[in-house]
Every structure is written in structure tokens, then in C-alpha cells.
Length: 249
Image (cartoon, rainbow, N blue to C red; front, side, top):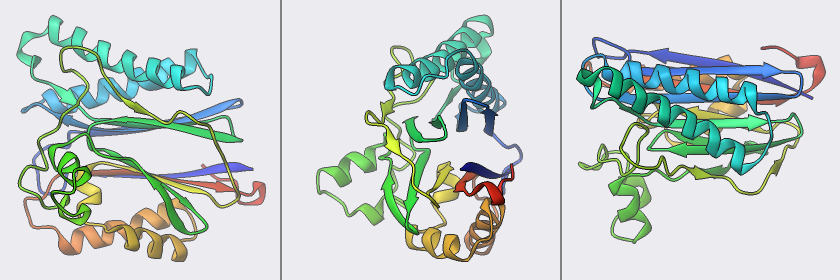
């Protein structure tokens, strides 16, 4: 079994794209990461790029499939951003969200900070999705609002955790290894992506897709139809756990 990967990243209606994404596939493991930068002019795109580079570099040096390893990858990104802030004070407000997926080709683990999400599809249905570190997510968990109100809540951009904030990174890490099954799929995406694509639509588009790039293209078409002209950057990585005969990167 192998992975197929597709990705999309667009500045949307903004002047700059502050998102970053990347992946690395080695003989004994693979890592995918998506980050959504925050912090104004240039700061956001610098923070997200630092995070992706630091996480992939940390994974190269430590490919263990463990919660501790994933925490170390997130911490590497967090510390790299803090160091950049110290070196260049005009970037003191740069922050980023991050979501990453790691696999040894048999099992998978993931982690995130902020409101960039991971969706795990099994049997064509969403089997798991991460919870945002945001004010609306806390409200939904407390039963104050319905889950479907998170998308357009007025406080949706009030994040409770982000890389580059003083203190510990505090990611949420999947503790138990998830044994992979044939035709498992993953979607890692920023809020500018999941805002316009509903979970049921992710499943529908997956059922019709021939590969991850096709899946992302179908979902991207929904964004371009629905979003207003000033909509946010959007970035996503799609990953299929595929048969050897379907191997493609």
C-alpha cells in the first residue's frame, strides 16, 4: 500500500497568500503539514513557511510514530517562529496555525494547533475530525451554539492557540496510533477551505474523485462558486491510502 497526495493553495481574494503546505515521503515514513499564517503584512506568510519547514525538518530527524515525536515537531516550529520574532522585532506578531499527519505506511498519527483541520475518511465517510482551538468551538462544546454555527460565527477568528504565541505550543495530539485501512483518506485544510465546503460535500466529492487532486479540484470549485470577492486564502492537502497499482505522488 502507498499514499497518493494532492494539494491546492490559493490567495483567494487577498493580495497575498499567508498559507503554506508541504509533505515529505521517505522509505520508512511520510509527513504532511498545512499552516495558516496570522499577523499582518508579511508576518503570516513568514510564520506559516517557517512552521512547514521546521516540521518537515524535525520529521526528517525523528521519524518515530509517537505522540512525543509529533509534539517535538510542533515544538520545533513554535520555537523557530519565536526565534524569528526575537531576530526581527517587526515580526513580533507573526503567528500560524498548523495541522500535520504522520504515517509509517501502516498506521497514522496527527496533531494540530489552531483552527486548521484534519478530516479522516474511512469507507467514504468522515470517521474523525479535529476540534478547533477557537472561541466558537468552546461554545459548541459547551452546548451554547450548534456545531454548524462555527463556520460563520462572528468570533470564529478568535483563536485560543497558535504557534508563535509566548509560552508552550500546546498542540492537540492523537494519542493512539490509527491502523490504516484500504481506501482511507485524509484532508488537511485551513479555515479558508473548510468554511465553504461542508462535511457531507467532502464525502460526496470523495466518492466521485479518481485521485486526491481530483477530490481537491471538486471541492475547490465549490469555494470559487460560493466565496465573495474578498475571501480568505485557502489551502488543503488530500491524501489517499492506495493500492500499489495506483501509486502516484
